[in-house]
Image 1 (cartoon, rainbow, N blue to C red):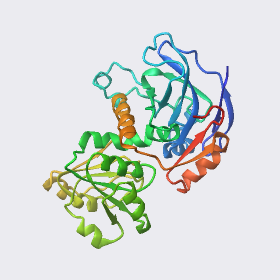
Image 2 (cartoon, rainbow, N blue to C red):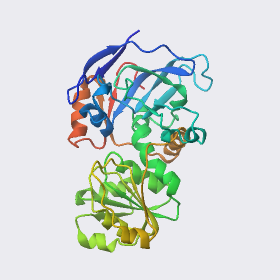
Image 3 (cartoon, rainbow, N blue to C red):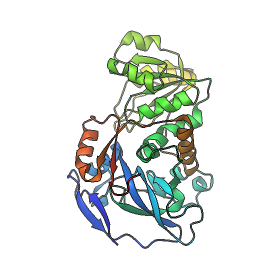
Image 4 (cartoon, rainbow, N blue to C red):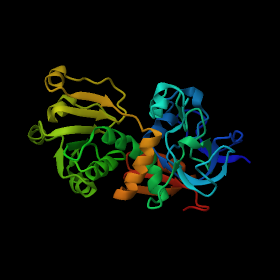
Length: 338
């Protein structure tokens, strides 16, 4: 049976109805009937051709929630009817040093859900069950879908670096930032939100921020100097990173999770004298994503979402592209939605 989807046939083209014959179900594979799929900024990069022309035709979508309809003969931990999710990664070699140490997201042979494979803007998907995540009962499917990429992206560095005694900052209050504020607060940190928009202060505090800094206000940035142990940047534009190094305390870390496509300019003097670090972080391992979903359910972490029918995919993409989404767009297949 063919899978119905929406695909971009060439770079920078609107998505259009598309059908494909799925591969044969492997022994460790499952088939998932998709009920919801989030729209991520990375999907926009894929459609624009950032990942190259060889991926077209491309069916985007890597924030998937749905129900298992079929399992391969060797699948033991999942069964038909289970409500599950899929994120950015659909596979890895499972044999290298990174995979065997539980860091599958760093595998050189990792496979993306919707690059080189057809993704979640569809009614179904077949995928390796080891990269499929049971969704806790307390998480609604539209919320879980957005968490599987956006949530995992900011949870992972917090899990690695944050402690309840820390003061943590989040740059940007958007699709990633609104998750980061909630997670950092739930981790027990004192949380500071950084934004260029003064009008977002109350929303940031509703999401978990204790403090709010308008980054265009020089006095506010000076006052914040030497106050934070950890800063997570969720924006995709180049900033004056020296300003944020000055905000860090000694041994503090600046973590970039937003995709900045320009080269960074990092002043070495404060970096060395304060023993500070600048690092990147990418999605999360299988174990990390399972923990993230459980943590989100226990702490009531919620995505701010707007849902649209799957056939409105181009409208949802345009809202995301023009930064009119507040803060995540989620597509849904109406039939059998839960």
